[in-house]
Amino acid sequence: MKVLGFESSCDETGVALVETRPGGVPRLLAEALHSQVDLHAAYGGVVPELASRDHIRRVLPLARQVMQQAGCTLAEVDLVAYTRGPGLAGALLVGAGVAVALAAALGRPALGVHHLEGHLLSPFLAEPAPEFPFVALLVSGGHTQLMQVEGVGRYTLLGETIDDAAGEAFDKSAKLLGLGYPGGPALARLAEFGDPAAYALPRPLLHSGDLDFSFAGLKTAVMTQHRKLGAQACNQSLADLAASTQAAIVDVLVAKALKALKATGSRRLVVAGGVGANLRLRERLNAGAAKLGACLHYPPLALCTDNGAMIALAAALRLQQGLAALETDGAFEVRPRWPLAELSGAVLVPA
Ligand code: KG4
Ligand code: ZN
Image: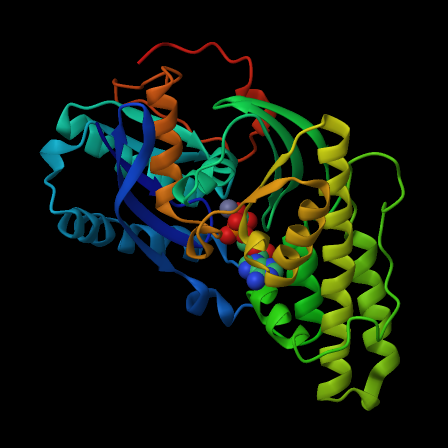
């Protein structure tokens, strides 16, 4: 079975084609992505209306590109998947509208996928694929969560941020340091030249005893430190502040992820979402997990941030497990706010 997937929840238009394999993990046949970074950079953040309009411009050419790369025709597509939420309502509607219209034209079903389930299952696109059950650290621009994952669609929330997400902490701190948008990768690059111990920044909730996170205070501490530097700020002090900020975020993420492994007795950790691309985070998690005798799984580096492959893959895995309630009547809705835990225990119609 071939699944064509569309991602349009925020500032990346992604399209991909995957193929299910009996008894195996679905295989990625082709994928294409257009990032709107240049479009939003001038505004210092994502402008929802511009995002929607750009998704409209990009989505069909990207779909054509994917079919061409895969050497397949649309008639071979068995299922069309799209990101149903969470995300920007207008942006989601573009992917959903195109996917459902295409499915109707092809006489095939459409399936709305949870964006975070896409991230969560994206390590299945890497070799070796993880085995269930595992603990997942989901670290994206909008979410920071630890989940216990028993299987596809069986997710229990272990802890989450009570305010800003880890990606948001990277982005907001980067903005304060004048690094523009998107800040995470820029801050990580600058941090390579700095001393992570130069500034003592808070590690919020590090010893809270639970698996929750809080990053809003860190941003304030970075702002205060940046103000203190004032006119004395130079390339080195900014790099030191970037490195100290990254170290504070990474310290908390690593400590809580390892705590979750201990608390659940699990020896498998999956890391997904944009912040999962952070090399310092990977380094520290690798070292920590090795000490616990745990194994770590990441998506391929290029598939850490938003993409169509993870949406097509999540739909294909749902289909393989008979967990997909398929829509065939051309009706659809998007869910700009949609807790991942709601997927567990949902009434599921065999495909
Ligand atoms: O998963 P994602 O592409 O989008 C959401 O679903 O939110 O994650 C984007 C987030 C942004 O906050 C971005 O700054 C962050 O991931 N990010 C990084 C890195 N690459 C992306 N943060 C730190 N280091 C990186 N290398
Ligand atoms: Zn995402």
